[in-house]
Image (cartoon, rainbow, N blue to C red; front, top):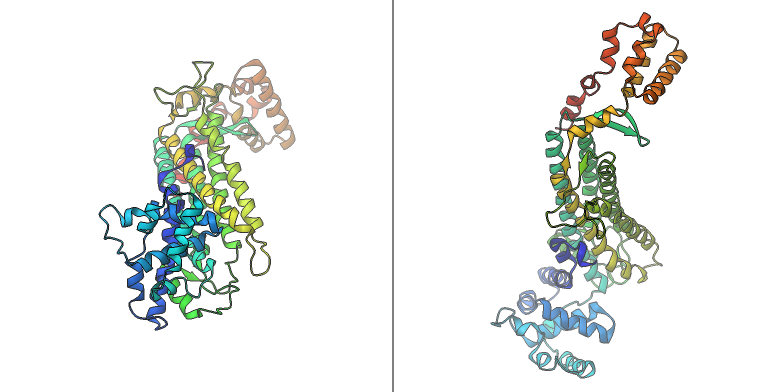
Amino acid sequence: MIDRYRGDEMAAVWDDVSKFRAWLEVELAVLEIREKLGQIPAGTTTYCRERTWVDAEVVATIVRRDKAIGHDLNAFVETMRILIARGWLRDSWTNGPCLGIVARELVESSDHDEATWNLVFGRLLSEVSRPEAALFHDGMTSYDTEEGATALQLMVAHTIVMKRLAELGDVLLKQSERYRGAIMMGRTHGQHAQPTTFGAKLLNYLELVRRTRRRFADSRDEIRVMKLSGAVGMYGTLGPEVEVAVAERLGLVAAPVSTQILALDRRAQLVNGLAEIAAVVEKIARDLWILAQTEIGEIREPFGKRQKGSSAMPHKKNPIGLEQLFGLPRLVRGYASALLENVATANERDISHSSVERIAFPDAFGLVDHMLRRLVRIVRDMEVSPERMLENIGLSYGTFASQKVEMLLKSKGMPAELAYRKVQYYSAAAVQSRESLLKVLKADVDVAARVAPHELDDCFDLKKWVAAEDVLYGRMK
C-alpha cells in the first residue's frame, strides 16, 4: 500500500520484521512443546530462543538469501540455523546482535556481489552442526510455520480494526447527542420527504457501525486457527498432540481438518468482512458528501487553515476526504473478490493463493484502517449548520406534511383516492406558486368544511414530526 494511506500501527503488523518474528514465534513454540513431550532433548528451546532474533538487518539477510533460492521460508530457516549454530547470544552485542546481520562473515561480505555473498552464506550453512539447529523446523512444512504466524498477524490486525470501529462509534454517539433535536429534511430518491433530525441520522450510522462491528468480531473465531499437520494434513511427521499443544501455547486453535494449508474460506470471510466495513464507511461518506454540496450546505468537511481546495479556484473547499472514502472501498471489494477466488486451490494445495495474500492482507487491512481513521476525524470536526437545515426545509413549502394531511382528510370522511389526489394537486400548486401548502389547503372550501384550522396546523408542526426522536435515543443506550 502506498504511504499516502499508511497508518503506522497497522503497517507495523505487516512489515517483514513482524512477519519473520511471527514465524520465529511459531518455530520456538514447536520446539517448546516437543521438548515438553520428550521428543527432543531438554534445553533445546532455551538454547535456540537465546540465539535467534529478527531485526531489520536479519530481515535484509533473509530477503537477500531468498533472492538466491526463491523460497523465503527456507531463507528464514537457513538464517536462523546459522544464528543457532554460531552460538551468539542475542543480547551480547553492544550495537545490536552481530551489528544486526547474521554472522561476522556476512557483515564483512555484505558489500560483495550476490554470488560472493551467497558463497559465504552457503559456507556458513554447510558448517552448521549443532543438533539444536537441526531441530529448528524439524518435521515441519513451510505452511506449518506460516499458517500459525499469519493467524497471529491477522489477530493483531483484527484487533486494530475493532478498535477503529469503536472509535467511530464513540464519535458518532457524541455527535448524535450534540445534534439531538436539530431538525432537517429527510430525503428519499434525492427529493425532500419528511422531517428528521441530524441526531437521528447519526444514530442510524451508529447502529450500522455497531452491527458491523459485532459481525466482524465473529470473524475472529475463523482466523485464530492454525495447522501443524504436515505436508498433506495427515501428521506424517509431527503428531496431532503437538499441533494441539502448540495452538494452545500461541493462543490459537488447531483446525479440525487441514491439508498442507488451512481451508481458505476462513480468510475469504474475513476480508469480505473488511469489504462490508468499507461499504459502511462509503454509505456514511456519501451521505455527508451530498449534504456538503453547495446547494444543500448543511455540513462541511473539516478544512485546514493552510489547505488548498483547488489549483485553479481559490474559493473551493472540496470535500476530498469524503470522496476518498467512497473511492477506496472499490479496492477493498476487489481484494474480497480475490480472496474468494483463492478458496479453490487444487487438491491438498497449490501456491496460487500465496501471492494474493501477500498483497491483499496488508492492503485490505491498511485501507480499512485508513478509512476508519479518516472518517472519525471528519465526523468529529465537521461543520454542521442547523440554520441551513431549517432554511432547506422551507424549500418544500410545507409539502413534507402531505401524508399527515391525507390521513387527516380520510379520517374526516373523504374517500381515500380523492384525499390522495387533492393533496397531490395542492402540493404541486404550492411549489409552483411558492406558497405554503398549509395556506393553499386552508383556501379550499371542501377541506375547510371538514377540518378545523388547528387540526391542519398540527400537520405542519415540525416538532411533532420528530417527537419520537427520544425513543430512538433510548434504544441506542
